[in-house]
Image (cartoon, rainbow, N blue to C red; front, side, top):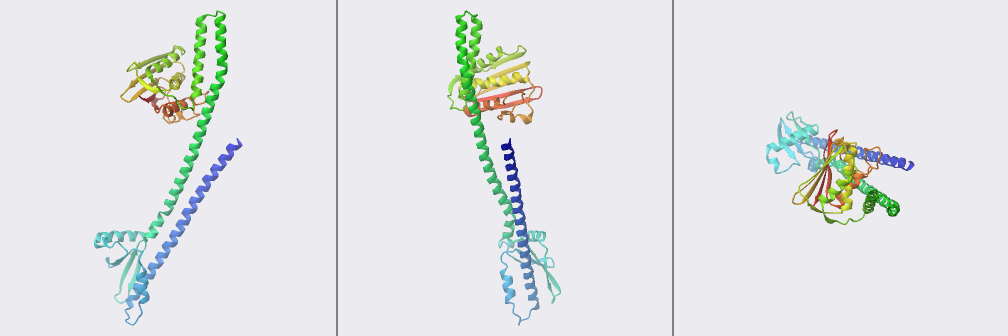
Length: 381
């Protein structure tokens, strides 16, 4: 419990620290942006002053400084207007400036970004307006925090996926270990039960009773073998899907309530696919058992098998309580269950067996609350 609390504290500390770092980046970038913008404004004010100085038009005056100031502006786009007419521009696309529409569009952008600077001409009693927009460097600076945050987000996503994959791998190892340990624990009493069956035969016990006990013990042996195969490399062989499915279907039909109606339908009596028959049968039985539980021992179960040129389709439909839409993706997660008793491993293992071992697909085809659920298994031929 203490370990869990420590993990939660560390998690929140990382989240809060990340928010603080992002906030500092945004604040510093904004502060730098404003300072840079003010510097550009100051440069343009000096430029406006230089233009105003030319108005004196004193032939003996030294305008070398003003020339230098005007010539130094090689990065801030600007347009000068007089009496609503564009008279001069600088640092704009030399090709596009040949079109007046481009200049008017740039002027509109400049008016939206910065207040104009007024150049008063005393001689002619006129005024010019200097409009300008942010330099390319300042424009790029706007997107710097976005790019930086995006990089941080991608970096965090990679770390998250790395740890998540490790967690999933650990979970898989845990389920595999539990399955194999279960198989090992079941194996010991099974050996004893087989011995007791032989003793019952020697004591002339009713053969039908002994045979039923032996059938169930053999069934337990198959279950133990299935668990032992979890986590190992599966051996896939060509089997008749119809027969394998029908055997599991019949086994559960005989041991279920008479109030449950079983219907089996197939488009062909022989449909072959590469499967591990023990694991595949376990999936079918698990889905049918879940259907029986969902119907609370009363209802209909329809199992149908069909095919096309490349795939086999197995549909298992029940008339149970159904699954809500928000739970349909969660039901395949390890540990998730809606039952009062259970580990929540059945559908998770079924998904792993079908998709990881058999390279197929298992999903909830459709489900309606209080009407029932249909599961679909797709296997390659």
